[in-house]
Length: 194
Image (tube, rainbow, N blue to C red; front, side, top):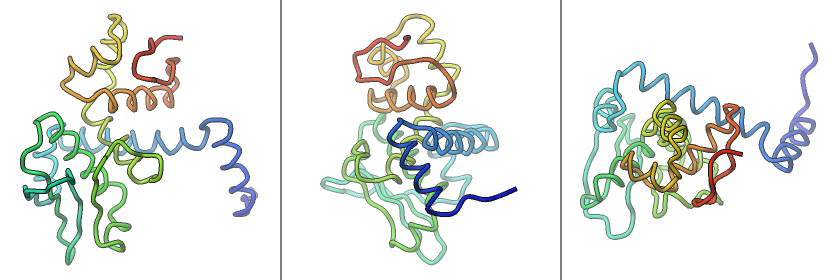
């Protein structure tokens, strides 16, 4: 069996990005598997219980702008979270930071931690995008999302019904697309089914 050279892989990756997602789908599916495995192994989707089970200390702070941060100090893992977040946003930020722990711990050690001002701004950061996929997978179970879609809910209605954010629900539909479901990429007000 032959292996691809780095330059061949880079060319394939660029084509995949240009065509819209083959390798990104593979990457997304791996993140989905990790999130599902964690939720199943711990028998919970509650971010505070997950953090506790993983040995991550959660520390509320009076941040002015930033919502949360993940940091590893002397092998101890911490999530710092803004102390006055709405419960919906707190859950999303917690799961996002747990996503950094599950997916990017090594990078966090090297970088001295991460901080997020706008966790939905994923244009410039692969790691932010991946942490958001992780958060969407744990907070928005496939079976529940699919049931809402089958019952004709639009993305805004799903976000309200699941006590989530429309941006996270839109991202979740992208993960379902990566899993083979035939939905449209969401622009927030579009219908799901093609």
